[in-house]
Amino acid sequence: MRRGETNPVQSDLPDHRAQSVHPALPDRPAKSGLPEVPDRPDRHPRRGIAHYIALGLSAAVLLIVVALALVLVVVPRIAGATPLTVLTSSMEPGLPPGTLIVVQPVDTDTLGVGDVVTYQIRSGESAVITHRIIRVDASTTGERSFILQGDNNGSPDPDPVLPEQVQGRVWYSVPFVGFANSAVNGVDRAWIVPSLAALLIAYAGYSLARGVREAIVARRERAVADPANPPGRG
Image (cartoon, rainbow, N blue to C red; front, side):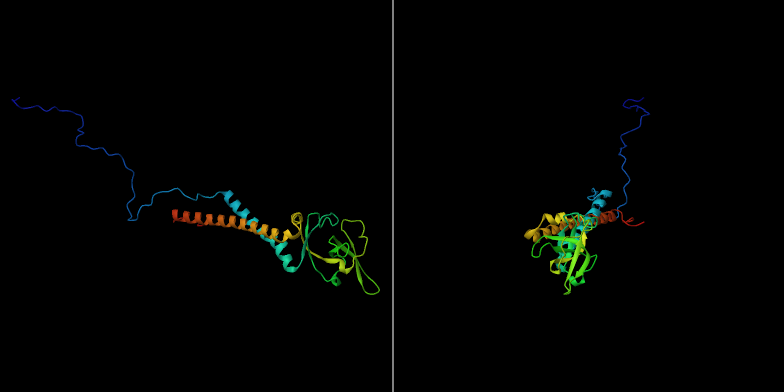
């Protein structure tokens, strides 16, 4: 070996000086030129069966409240009828206690056997009875009178009923609602009953509208998230 020369050391180890290690990166889709939208949690997760049950119940409540308002408030007022509550069992089983009856004014000349009418016990007093006509009598002068009896009674009412005592004929009845009608009476009924009906209708309508809106929003967001398989597509 000459002076000034060096003998390089041979090694079987790999040379790391010219190598760089990069961590493995996940495959990225090719850029489409559209701005990337960051992932975000779904604000409206898929509703379960409980949500749709609640929506159905809200719709049912709305329909029931509207129907009751029509039957108990609107229709009687338009027709000039009077809602009354059955308090005794004399007309069972057809009209048990708690039944609300709507009594419509009637021409007494059209009344006959089988009609259920409401009459004043004594003319000019507020106490009334609702029973069925079982016989129609006529005097020598042509004046009519009615014999009435409760369906659940064993004998007719003690006194004949004159035409001027008749308040009207039972038009229709709604079971179980009469107690609520009796709870509100006098002057207060004119505004309390319609107000309660309006509040119930408003609440049921709000619940129904909210449920429908949430369902529509969720449906649209699912359609945006998965355009290839929009909701409702088989």
